[in-house]
Length: 391
Image (cartoon, rainbow, N blue to C red; front, side):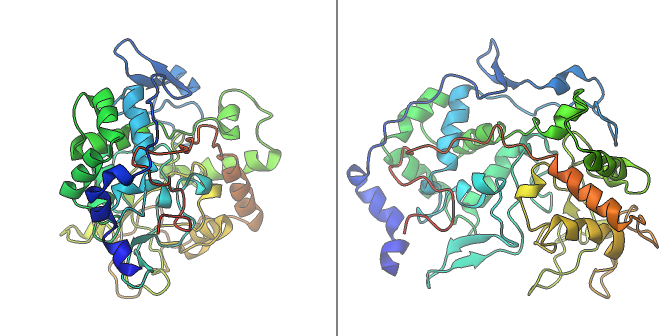
């Protein structure tokens, strides 16, 4: 049985005629909330388009940053099929959606992610959590350590990581060209045969449509004063006020500044110190630095922080009020973020903390959650979990 798992991609390449054929057509329509422009690409439309300034820092009506790229409906839809297709992994048993699960906030609900299957059938444990992909196109850097600088590069990296999807560029191209359903779709979307470049661009195209700007908070911003409860309004005022100052990093409307920050978290259970962006860097300011995550749909993505150090939102909020910066391992010379490097915390009461947690619930919005395809062009079963994948 182990041999079958190990040699699955080779067997598939040798016998493509045995694959189940999934009739697939790419959509010519842009996803909901996107407008098709004259050049054939899709442009996101939200009420934030009516606001001028991208700088909010606690204010309500700030515009969104410019999207880095636009894509056609066909490129987006091709990326959707690829995102759910286990063919992209080296052993044909792991899709992007296996870890970025729609049912779990486009994360996986684990403190640390799991990667490629090992010889004993278990999966390789990874040192960090699976980050959510909501609003990923608007970021300035990607990965927990900020090491990728473009959306396509972010999409490509796990494909060829030996610990994650364990594919190679050569095998990926062979697999896509050998699957009868894919070459015509790549021709339709890009006018050329499958390649590493077009595959990762398609994944980036799809991921650029994973947007969340229709929460109760957004309705409140746009004028619906009844959208938030009294407790949530109190929580937002604490969140953005001088005492809490959460918006120093979690800036609306993205609820992240996409910057790196050192907050002095404890080591993850069973792990040593994670240097984050400081690994391999001579800059002491990057030691222990991690990218500030978005808080959009935060209620769906427990546990929290880069390696699941907080089990609940209440735990995460309390960290900033109590342990902030003081949980770092002894002897590690961290240059803490200025807002963390304070002798005392923000002095939030227990009620203030509860109000902030209540406010964070108002950021939940999965209206534009992507539809899982019934079938993918490889003929493999679309994957949305690590627990129900191809053997």
